[in-house]
Amino acid sequence: MSVHFLLDGDLVEIANVDPTATLLDHLRYTMRRTGTKEGCAEGDCGACTVLVGDLEGDTIQWRAVNACILFLPMLDGRALLTVESLAPDGALNPLQACMAANGSSQCGFCTPGFVMSLYGRCVGASGHDLPVADVLAGNLCRCTGYGPILAAGDATGPLERDDSATVAVLKALRDKPAASGHHGDRRWFAPRSSAALADLLADYRDARMVAGATDVGLWVTKGLRSIDTLIFLGDIAELQAIDESPAGVRLGAGVRYADAHAAFARLHPDLGELTRRIGGLQVRNAGTVGGNIANGSPIGDGPPAFIALGAELTLRSRDGRRTMTLEDYFLDYGKQDRRPWEFVESLWIPRPGPDAIIHIAKLSRRFDSDISAVCGAIHLTVDEGMISAARIAFGGMAATPRRAPLCEAALVGQPFTLATMEQAAAALRADYAPLSDVRGSAAYRLDAAANLLLRLWHREQGQAVSVLSLDAVHG
Image 1 (cartoon, helix red, strand yellow):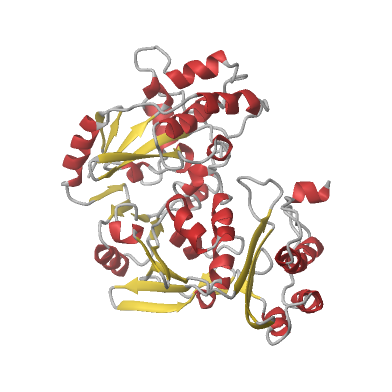
Image 2 (cartoon, helix red, strand yellow):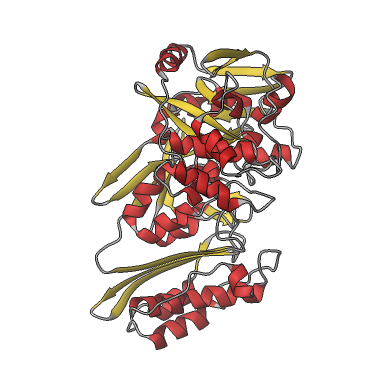
């Protein structure tokens, strides 16, 4: 079966698709749309930013994504805009004209990516309500010309788009059967329901599930890995549901971090702030909550916070469902409690109670769009000055994201005082034996994790506390 998508409103059909062929390579080498640049090939620099549109009712919801790690089958049934789409007759659109007049382009290599990110903001794409600096956090300028670029973004207001014709075609494409295909001995599927996904996994137990490809994409572009069977999850509406209630939030595993941001911020502001710093906007527009959990990375930003908040995970297969606490899912480095025929279906996060004191922090060398050296989450229940419950979890400190039992034991039943927090900080040092790597030494990680406990206490006393990246700490 062919992949079908709309480019500038025109239908594109690609037969015999290599399931791990990237959109960037197809644009540059097949379609000769060379305005989209290859920089890092790992979703970090934003030079390859394009807009992908999903049909939502009678409108198109655009989102900026990195073409370098987007596999072609993930475009099926969607719309696409590249930098060439903005000036089809050769006349610059208002955003491009503003950037030219403002001197916002130097060498020009990164400019198309900046233009596409800002254009998404102008047309109401996902993340359009963020400040310009947040929208551009996933775009790097190697000439350090950020000032004029930010100014151009601030100076350009909303732009109108007429997507009515695109909506009509996408509605027709939605009526075609679920997409699938093969390329030689390699095959791919794009099911449209959780039940269909469960059936596929029962039949193809070696299949690799792909939601946003923010991790798997690098296996291909950097690791040069070949994957025989892929199942793309972007067409399963059930996995993209968010259900908020007074008791908590349930998220389908396919919910993108950009779409989860508001619900997370309502659970606790620190969780919203953590979500804002998970990659750049392009990464949050692709990466999913379930994918971040399923791959089991010890430095994934979401799991430590979810564990500290008492999250539960639901797995599904053709045989039924299993629910477990999230910390029980992570067994060891690269090993999770998920059978080959199961998939992560949803995540349940209880809403913190009125007596909860919560601190969630990410420490990294760059403030924006960087991998954590330490990601910590502290969740205390304090009643009349006494700590009655404690859940402490860290990422980047062990082979898996996990809790700190000795630290928790030092807190429960004790008064919420600086002396108690100092004792807990000392106990925490025996909970973990972190490694040293390019993001931070073992000694730094232990010091930083312990200091987060002290920072929480000082913050609760109304004292000003710093929010520093490692660059600022290392001076």
